[in-house]
Image 1: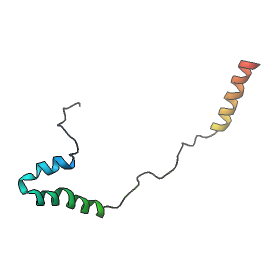
Image 2: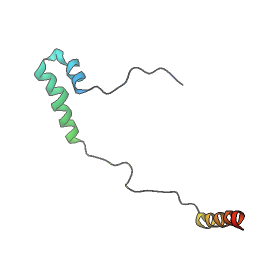
Image 3: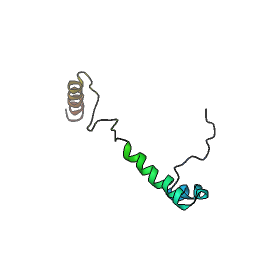
Image 4: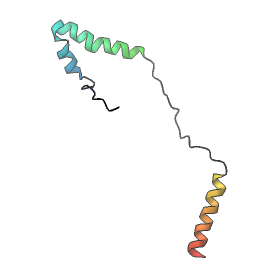
Length: 78
C-alpha cells in the first residue's frame, strides 16, 4: 500500500532549461517555453464543478432543527 514514491515535482523553467541545455540555448528555449505556451493556448479551460454551493437536501431537516432548537431552549430556560 505505502510504496515509496520517486521524487516527483514540477520542474521550474530554469530546471527545464538546464535539462535541455544539451540541445543548445535556442532549441531548449523553444522546447521549454515556446512549445509549452503553444500547448497551453490550445487547451480550453474547463470547470469541473459549477460555481456556487450545493448543500445536500435532507428531507424534513428544517422541521427537525426547529424542534431541536425549541427543545434545547425549553431545557435551558423553561
